[in-house]
Length: 219
View (tube, rainbow, N blue to C red):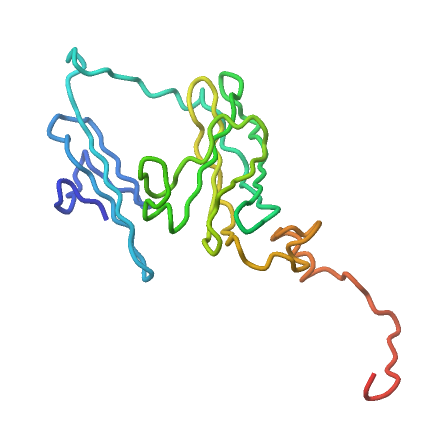
């Protein structure tokens, strides 16, 4: 649900909420200035996010205006991050570059993280909440996220960056809880917490029995 200045937002020909919950404002006017609040809720709770929109005349000398980059100039989002090498306080995430690099070379990748702690604004930069930036301008397609809290579940996204700006986010990684027992066969060696490997093991014929003959009722 969306709210404007604390009141339920009324949709009209200029204000529209899409099926995925995105608020679209058209033909902006100064009366559109104010605080917009989005409330996402489920049976497990709710999350509230607010942002302030200021609409002013482009001739106002006291305000610096910036034109948004052409989306075709931006790089495409990286692939979904995969999680490996889980320890009590760190994880390694990897991803692949999108074939679409945009109108200039890739400068690096931005890694972002979400957890219960970041949602509450605990131990986050400048008390930011929700998705927080872990690192900017990462030059490789892998990154070790450190200083995680044991027992907390984390998720990650990655964005590519070129001289025109940041890409859309990658798909969200699988949720991972650090500090759990990660020494099982699922999380060791080649399996390394990979959903694909787990699926293969559950569905493929890893060992096939040929002409199996029972010896007695106990064997």
